[in-house]
View 1 (cartoon, rainbow, N blue to C red):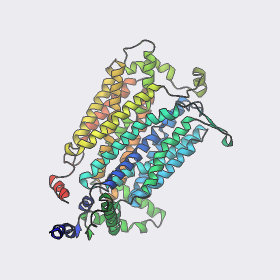
View 2: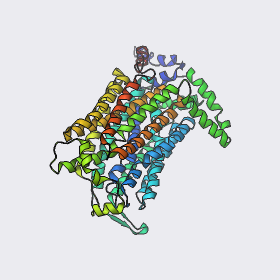
View 3: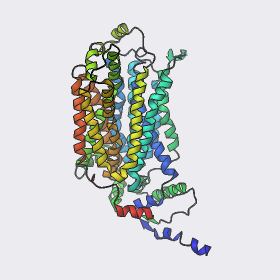
View 4: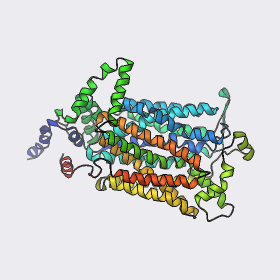
Length: 537
């Protein structure tokens, strides 16, 4: 009887001679490999925040060491985003034509190198160039990781995996103010005579922010290339071997090898033919440029033009508020604290900005030294407290979204977040209770929740051969929104503070309306019949 009971176990595997790629991924189970990849992907996403927004903790305490004026602070705060914008299209092309892993791993190593070098620089313009390259290289892994992670999961679990990585990203963000407090608020200094430099805590902070990139690069050396990418590039045997490896790791080797003879997916046939012509196109520079154009142009033509436009506009609007308004968050909160210290307990945020605008207008470095004779070596504790609250909101919010995104769907979440954040941004203008207004400001910045959701939507909207490029271009428009938002606030804050919040709030409400026009957004992640088939597999 024992022998008879064991016989049926391999029989279902023998039936799977020719199955679709999505069903093959479902048969690998969901286990150790998936969790490890989700964690690594989340840390990579957190590395982007450390490299781009971590500099906001450095600028106040590095002012005298780098001899920065207010304008130069603005340049240094946004130069990483410029690096991301400049390289997003390039990395998207290479990721779609050369491979996801081949882009992610080298760019992580180069990001770490750029950050380490920038910690040993004394001149402002040299550190600006190095921070540009840090953004240039981190862009390769930040956008490509969405496609890489999504392609190891079937349609049912793809969005959950991306949101799981986003939760890890949220926890990583939560660590940023803690790390900054522990590292920057130290009082040591190390003299390096060889380069005539005094190595201070803020310099070490740049290296610490780059460490996750280095660790993830080493971790991914043990991971395979995306099986979906392998399959779409005419390498079904390698894709099948990756699937077998995933299954073995997820089941701890306790189950027999999957009996799959062939993976069939009609939607990939044209992609294979397209990529078989690739070496011929790459023989000359013009051919290479033509291939790059062929990889990009379809995104702005039918049937993808509408999809590309919507995801790019949404990411622009999200980053415009979440990053653009964030760059001045510590400054505005600090101004409120200054006004409150004079006895004004009932005032709007813009009212506090107006009362302090003459002190904070653009000045030369010499004028700043005259006004502030003692350079700041530490940050005020309130800057860390408010940043910690914001990151905690992100971590908890992303955890909740990860749990509800499959049963509820993406559209209700997008609309709810956009509407709440947009209204909060407008209410900031009218509330004259500083603490409540600060909370409204925090909710406005929480629109960053939607970045991962829109990225998950992008992964689902485009085929494998265009997926990484689509994500990179959409995030490139997002980073353009960051630069536009930061410059808009910097230009209008002292003279038209209310206008900055009006623009931010209304733009988010516009994004809520635009969300209804995302193709297929009213459908759940996977139809019920498909779910049932996957569960049985």
